[in-house]
Image (cartoon, rainbow, N blue to C red):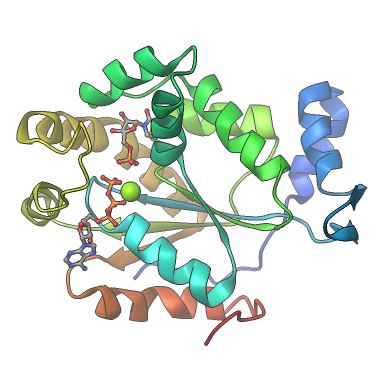
Length: 240
Ligand SMILES: Nc1ncnc2c1ncn2[C@@H]1O[C@H](COP(=O)(O)OP(=O)(O)OP(=O)(O)O)[C@@H](O)[C@H]1O
Ligand SMILES: O=c1ccn([C@@H]2O[C@H](COP(=O)(O)O)[C@@H](O)[C@H]2O)c(=O)[nH]1
Ligand SMILES: [Mg+2]
């Protein structure tokens, strides 16, 4: 595993850039994490913790969603799968639904602004400060757009490293009725992953933020590599 040992930056630079740019949209995001928010159902709470953002990367079928579920269970993160958010737009017949469906069928990447808007909405409406952003950013363009729109970088990045033949096998056995879980689309997704997503992985490796996980083995064997990453940050454990 390649791991970063340095301390966590917790948005510090991001705050400065938000304020300097006087960007209303970004400021709104920041305010959402610092303002006292009255809730009828839950009482008033202070979101006094800076967001902790984890990007979860890896090829199709590498096990990102499966491992995220375990992190949520143990460490109380909010799991935001970009793919799930896009599929929800399709299911809701939203204005962008048809375009998203066609893009997913082709294994291509949906325009950054759209995906980031969906992620931002979820983050702003969450009571949590710990986020797993699964399957995003998929390209350098995605990554830069996230930094510009949200005004933040991830604290850490998990990368599930899995051989192509294993990913293909898992996706073809998934049986969740996904329109992109067929051999033709998988081939396209793998090409897009290698061409556009691996440069993002390299970027975070060079920044010292990457935790590379060997994604071959049983779910529990893989989680044995993931667990210590989060344990090292001393988050309160929801369940050990
Ligand atoms: N370690 C593992 N060994 C065997 N099968 C696994 C393992 N981890 C996950 N799976 C299975 O492989 C399939 C793909 O896993 P998962 O959906 O978590 O991958 P993913 O990285 O989120 O994929 P995608 O990018 O396509 O959403 C699922 O059916 C899951 O149950
Ligand atoms: O940031 C994103 C995430 C996903 N997509 C599209 O959705 C499919 C499925 O994504 P999964 O992460 O495998 O669920 C992906 O192949 C892309 O077409 C996207 O465009 N942008
Ligand atoms: Mg997934």
